[in-house]
Length: 51
Image (tube, rainbow, N blue to C red):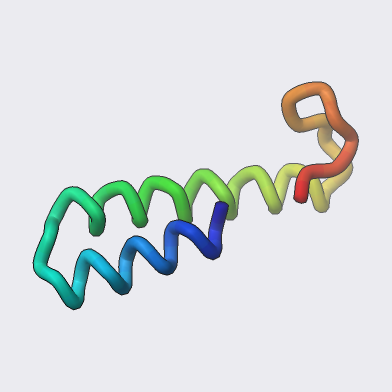
């Protein structure tokens, strides 16, 4: 999810499409939050780890 967010950020920046930029930021932030929660040992969506 983080990788997809970064790709959308780059594509949105290069093409000038602001909706891709916004979606990229959201995906990167949500992906980072899930990764941090999963690495701390918290259950994320019923799973002990998230990848």
